[in-house]
Image (cartoon, rainbow, N blue to C red):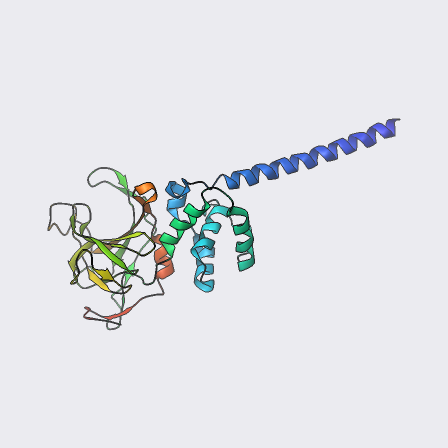
Length: 284
């Protein structure tokens, strides 16, 4: 009798452990699925686009699609946890089969494609005549800015090694249409390009413009203007900070302007540069 009770107790403990494990697995699965909704693209975690070094290497080596980037972000809790699978086409196809039934999937893919689909060139060409004409950048996304009131930095700054305005050419990262041009207090002389998939690429603090007007079509690699130090004041203000280019990327879910971190996009494009004889008349 005693042995039978012990046997039943062991079975009960085993079943309890099994059900607990299954319950935990369901909670984890439910938690993952809750990462996706029609509002996901407006959340800070998504806007960070924190793909990390491993996914960056996969994108560069395997020409990953925007859809695969989106799946990576979902499964890695938007880049802040380790991606729990091997990165290959089979894995991403299996993950797509899991997520594509979830409400919000089509919207999520649409905006992920808008961010990644049209990228072609790094915005600062490589000099063919002066090896010192380089730029550097760090992930300054949401770093504190105080001019005009405390706020987060909605972009990435590419800093000029040669602190001279008007000598670094700036080219379009994408095909597109010029949607804005002119002075902004915080952006100085800026130009904005709407890319084919719908994202808006913003280039600020220019010194001067190429012969280009609002409504013009541009191709990736076309000259937009030259890097400067304009902005932070009335039109014509310069010298408030070092020469640099501010790159911003925006999407428009529900017609609401939503900024996206350009840092990882620029990392992806670092080895994709047009070549230019500085100061640029000729872009190859």
